[in-house]
Length: 225
Image: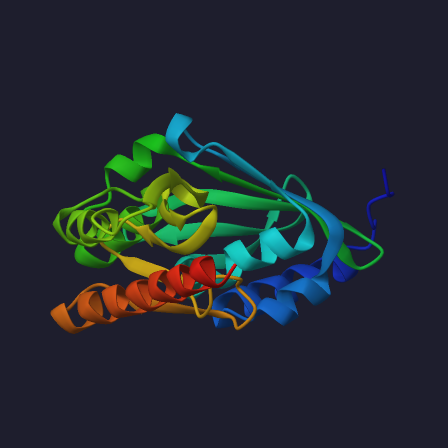
């Protein structure tokens, strides 16, 4: 295992770059600061337990979640190392610890307080709760229900409790509760992702249109094989 950097300034430089890239949803900038074999772990109750390995998967997850999630993160020392605290209107919700080696991030450990999650009450914090926990609500159920009516589509569990919609192993997109839908611009993920807020009817219709477009392209490719 690589030796962690002992210089707090070097650690802070990597963590600051990670935070800025997450807030911007910048996949390439996240890749640049992550070790190729980086490991991300989330803790905080059974529904939040997860682990991702590899720079591409970790960068993709934070590029999708960062614009909503990382805006609540603030610089701090976590276990004596450069880290982040996650704060909401209800106070401290959790912390993110990092291991930095050679200027690259090797591990990311997110710990959330399950009891504090239950106490999120105002509208902004409730939106964060919906995103983090991926609860299904009326909007999510409407989108999921329509997508599952398309032949061959099935659902699976995704990062942060999200619901993933798939066609023959290809991801059409995933939903974080009633908060947002993250949709690849092609079934192969080659063209990037778009995050669609689900706060309005227009957002819901746009998410459905993007998911439907991926489904139709997938069907055409199946017929051409």
